[in-house]
Length: 324
Image 1: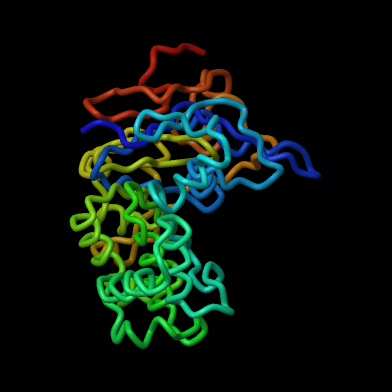
Image 2: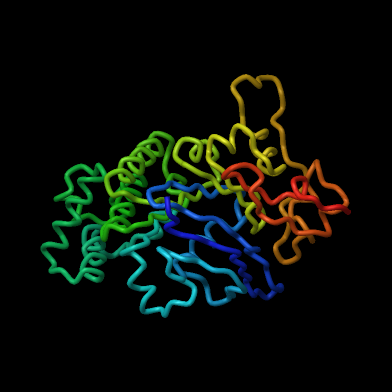
């Protein structure tokens, strides 16, 4: 499969009052057409910032220091804002993790969907409203003809999330970015949302970038997974390979920390230390202060994200011929 999106060596800083935060450090991964790619890691590791950079929706204090993002072979980082406005929503769309703050509280939800369609496709009000009703029906919302007249505060969290998915799909994009799409809903609704995304992937031939910290979700949903740590990509692999035989010590530690049904009476494993400050990240490998396998080269050399097994890449000096 050819890459739909390719992120190469993306490096980004935030300029803050406390100093320069090195938020992304040479982040690289690709997403194939029709693929669900999971981006996982702890809160603050750079997952959402990476997605917002793809869409060029960064705050004013963000500075892209290097790298490339291509979509269907076209470079996104150098495109004029007018062209990016045509890409957002039509070719790439995003579902944010808190639908309650993403929907406009003063407009009916159907009108918000219709506005997206009218803005991007130039169709009239009634056909746009009909598109909203059809989308609501497709994502499993009951009585869509009535629902289009209701306001966000009248809907449950699960209904709001389905409305956001409808909005993201309104112009039939090639790539859907789903940022923690099940965080704001309970477990039952979470399962329904994941099943809906699975169905929509097939029906709309979507590629999906699924951002989450939940390893159970990526195990169930994703074809491949990228593991992020402190603004870097630690490992990229097919899902079954990553869970069966992870290469990076951070990924290994994450999987050991998962609760297990057969571990009653035994304490959960944990990763020692704290996530580093991005204002002053560790030299060399950013994980080395917490790594059980660190050796003298780790603080001195930054590891490259290299393929050490077929389609399985990791950024770890354990697999490189590096001496102290």
